[in-house]
Length: 380
Image (tube, rainbow, N blue to C red; front, top):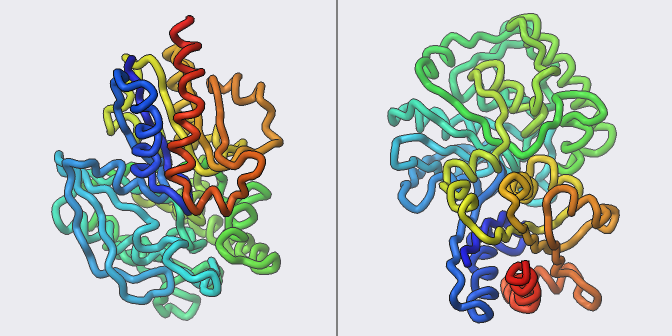
């Protein structure tokens, strides 16, 4: 029996690689003849760098600036064929800040742009941009500034915008950016379809998760609407109509406008570039997992993409997750293409306990449940 193991990270407790190894360790003793293929992947957020660079790629370390413009090292990947893989979280990520430092009105995506600029300077013509996990809501203006775009206030003074100062932008000049990026092709990998503004937009949905208080959220929303109007006037395209434009605090929109890079489901990209899709088509069972399974799981996340593939191949899919949202009915998981779903947090196990020894708990849960699954498959 051929089993493909394709998990995302269990956020806060296991990397995707650690989760894949724990699942494999749970299957191997119970079913020693199984042919296991491990594909630890990501969907555009943290972990995208490793999953898309792959074991045969290499990493380049660069001195950049963090979301508060403090110097720090970060790295990007280079795939064997020369494609650069740049992860926003590596330089401009939320996890780089202490909780007391988190404020999307003050943070900048400048470091992300520094990584991109370095990759281009080293000769990269194809660049994959993973934009999950950002600490910012500057609509990617910091990134654009690092790539050469100049922003000016009403007095003609140049400055580096942040979420709190987007309203000060009176004009911008992208000549240097266009020269730098000429001949380059960019692909944006993200895990959300959030619009730039509105009730489901970047400020109101994600700014609170990055530390913004209610008044700050509304201020960021107004600033974003103002900037969108300026961009629409200058480019002829409405950033508020770009699907996924709200990803990474509006960075999805600016990547589309100025780097001609439309947001692409990161999970789909990861699966295709890793070669997992080929193995899945010839498998008998697909196993995946993530930290929390909820309705977002089925909307662009890796598990949701695995379910889409499993359904199209008529393949049984088993999902392991740290916790399971009780508001999602069993029928919804089944309809999505999931055969079984098993949470690690069951009666008597708190989320804190589950996270403390997640690898062992995942391994034990797999070992306990996989025999029933395999017996069912054998019977069919």
